[in-house]
Length: 167
Image (tube, rainbow, N blue to C red; front, side, top):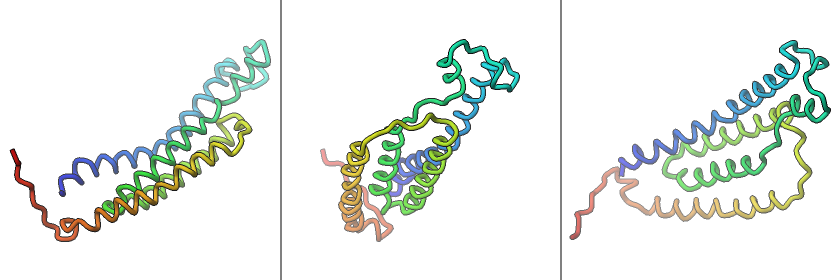
């Protein structure tokens, strides 16, 4: 029904828009926090050699970023991909939006790894293989939901009929 696009579809598109902007907000936020920690440690002088830190560990904590949350990056990619595959045939704008969001996340992730995060930990390929094994179900969702959507005559007739209440 057309009301679905107003009720649910609009919320999905708004969520996609927020997911597209959040990587840039996170880059700025992490950069500001890292800069503020360094400023506080150097007593607002801007000189890295003038420090309040008494140990090397305190100095490193003031000038290095936080650990890279790789699991959140993977979950965001899975969320964006599965939503696009599930609802994309009914709302085709989701496919280009998903592409732009994933490109934004990739770009911002590279900037954050270069400037804001510590060096990523050495990992094996088990997490990547796990994500790829989950990702193979996204095209199946597109096929099944797309078949159901294309088989629905109301989708093409631009006419809908409400079912009577059966009591």
